[in-house]
Length: 514
Image 1 (cartoon, rainbow, N blue to C red):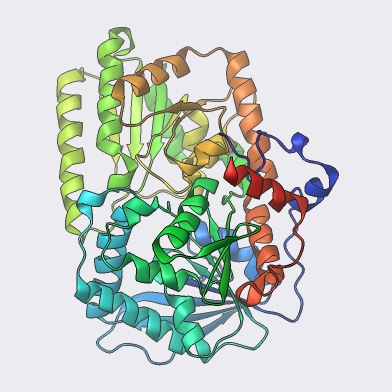
Image 2 (tube, rainbow, N blue to C red):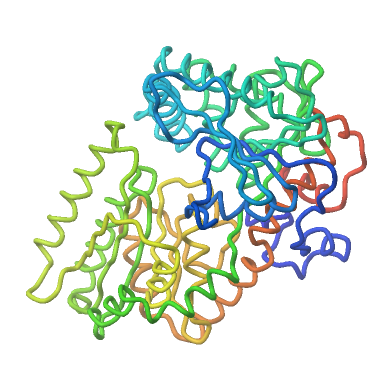
């Protein structure tokens, strides 16, 4: 079943009544009052001396919300120190205040590299065999969350509302509540939330589920993720469902709802239009000649399915020998988490697959796969997306995947490229007009590449137009505004759960049951 961001069946805003149009088409952020927004994330992006923030998806998404509420952004500085911070380091940048903490090498290893990225990350992405649980790492994870909570309480005001982000900080609300914090606290889970039987493999999973009940509102990328979390709380802890979209246990209530994150569509489209003069974009266009560009952009991670994607492209060439020399596949994959052993193994696997395919299929003057590990600016990527005939976005599992949305936004409306999209990316629920594939089936992906290259201009324009409409309506401003609106309404640990819900949530609740 395909759900749009409101949880209503169907693909467009046209199916919503007037009440729902008013609630969800509005892209204006919640109006600031006396209450301050406090954002907490693993890493904090502090603007440089010029006032320009370091590029980052979360930074872009939250910039306007923080400025509108004269907010505070709290988290790890990214630095490793000999001694842990006891007091947050404060930096004021315009309307936003930044507060950061340093970690020790042990903290970083146990909290970040250990439990968060060697235990939680693989489980959340259904890679059970790659999950490595260590009680020492888990203790470090809890210790850092406790330290963050102690430091944050020094900065909180009674009317602040707190928005915590992602799997690194799942226990933070519980630690804050233990210190007497009664503020409204929301949590957004940016990656997939697995089915209860998958999460149940992780030792101590019931403790992780229990701390989630200390949040007033939990946001997920998709309705499937929200349902998985609700089922986990009910099946593992014995919580009971409350209407709408909530669960309760031991006097605590939390609401779990899908808020698919969007992009700044207009800014990305504008960047793509202006990118033609950039040196890298010009060089790429010139080097292609008459060849069609197939393009993927991912962080180097085993959840992205990069070796599998390369093998699917190889299958495409084997099945379509007439395309040899006529297409180029560009894979951009900046490295990350190099200190985690699984990522070093992945890097070797990618390079081995790349070398074999280019060695077997390459010709003088033509290399089938161009592989780049450098990170590029949003403007450069937008320009490359615009000249690509096919966007190949085939993660094995992904919470949302904003690359797919950025590819659509960057297209030339008069001659758009085709998006091939994994059914296991959260964005597939919003963009059914893409060519949806199983990334584990290289034959299916290969067939989709051929179909995309052969697709008529009329069909390409129709598919692109539908996707663009969806992304414009439910952009990053909608995402932030919708979550903060609900947090303010249903804060203080579910105190307002008895309030009659707007139509959009009743519809979403009904969709979750179907």
